[in-house]
Length: 364
Ligand SMILES: NC(=O)c1ccc[n+]([C@@H]2O[C@H](COP(=O)([O-])OP(=O)(O)OC[C@H]3O[C@@H](n4cnc5c(N)ncnc54)[C@H](O)[C@@H]3O)[C@@H](O)[C@H]2O)c1
Ligand SMILES: O=C(O)C(=O)C[C@@H](O)[C@H](O)[C@H](O)COP(=O)(O)O
Ligand SMILES: [Zn+2]
Image (cartoon, rainbow, N blue to C red; front, side, top):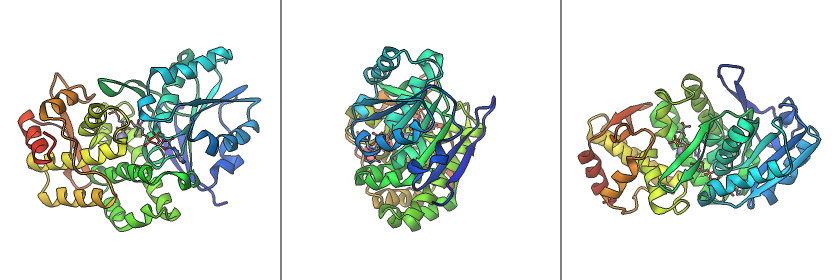
């Protein structure tokens, strides 16, 4: 088995950690060594992922921990809520598991965000490890320590910054991922080009078909480069005091779509893809980017099989939803806009300009 790629997140207070990326890591005993010592490991996963990968992860962890438990949650974005979180606490407390217990998040971003949040608040903090099994989770959600659950009024509104001990991304788990989920993961990969790396955007355009065909070398490069970019941003600005906001490109409208339709109707990656196209259009309207950029991004999103036309929720509803966005300040909606290829920043945009874009794309 080839040595895994390792990307490191640099953080103060001995909280730096590695992201290990490679094929076959679930079966590679080395990947699971050197984690915090404890009597018990608890794998948190869902009803879809458990039958696919829980037994293999259990097998690895039994070599390290005296006891390995399994908590299986319902699957779906609509279950990223207090009920699911409580199922984790019911198990931890029901079994009287102590504050050294290590949680393992085995699944996509929903499981990763909830397990991370559970780890952040159980007994005021226990260690956890991210074992992402979707493309989206491997390129984005397992990295950087944003953990949360949704609220009906807004996405990821209750959560904490809490970093994992390690991220272990086994590329082989992507073999079983449904096509629609693979495409959703591409959205967050595409995101990194316009905001941070113009050459990566070129690379994605050239290798998109290989990524869609699940070519392992292409996937390995996309996961590694995405993690490098995110690690660089998070290492500079862990708690989103400034720079980290660029990772939210496409998310202001994307989160409004998710919440507005009811969680789960559109996948997160689908909503972000569409949100990026509209944010590109806003970048053009305020004079930062030319029309050719909007068209380039729209074509790439379309080629990836992702939506470019938002649901028609009405301009007022979109504005209402976006005022709850975490980047909003004193009621003013702020967007991540592209300033040049590979560079982005946070900008206030007048409601009238936002409405123009919403009308132009049939959202109003
Ligand atoms: N914390 C962050 O920085 C961050 C970043 C991006 C997204 N997110 C969050 O991540 C979530 C989206 O994550 P997601 O796209 O992974 O969705 P998800 O977690 O819902 O997983 C997608 C689907 O794939 C299934 N699945 C997972 N692994 C599989 C595999 N290997 N084979 C077959 N099926 C598999 C899941 O059961 C689910 O049905 C959203 O809630 C979003 O807000 C968080
Ligand atoms: O890590 C970040 O920072 C991101 O913004 C990554 C996003 O892809 C992700 O969806 C994140 O959960 C959104 O953050 P939020 O603060 O807007 O909830
Ligand atoms: Zn996202």
